[in-house]
Length: 200
Image 1 (cartoon, rainbow, N blue to C red):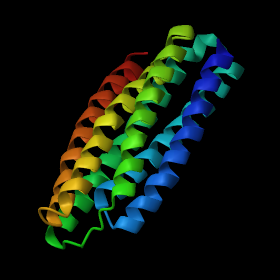
Image 2: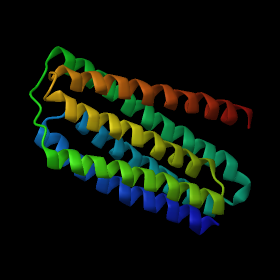
Image 3: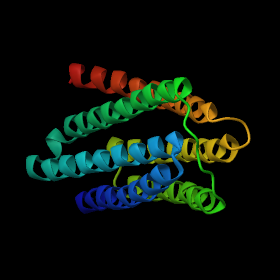
């Protein structure tokens, strides 16, 4: 069971880092803020998986008695990382709205980013399978985050597709909407895990 959790965290860490590098390249090449922010989001997910991996290693050493509290603490830290990413999106979106920058939308970029939506969906399903084998609030949080990321990346695809037809500011608008959704979702988790940690 413990090895299943470690495998889940390592799986997420490696795949999220690969997505980060892919989206970072496209975000910088196209000058798309939404794609760049999505890349940063994947970097945050990479750190979240690293936190989960560290937490599962500690649980293995401390024993199952401290499992619930340790996993709750990991979920809390992961939620803080996600909230920080959301705020970063909003800030950069507002800046892009005030100072629009030309965005280069290319079919190959749209195709690659569209494929990453399927990758995130696959990750969510794999995390869910891991959670069934070894139930864990941390893995469940990673699964939900992966499904949420599908919609985030879809909005990035829409932004990249529309930006050349409307204007550059739409890129910033999508970043603000995406960032707001991420932040609200993360804050809910932070409140929930804070209550658990205080009461236990």
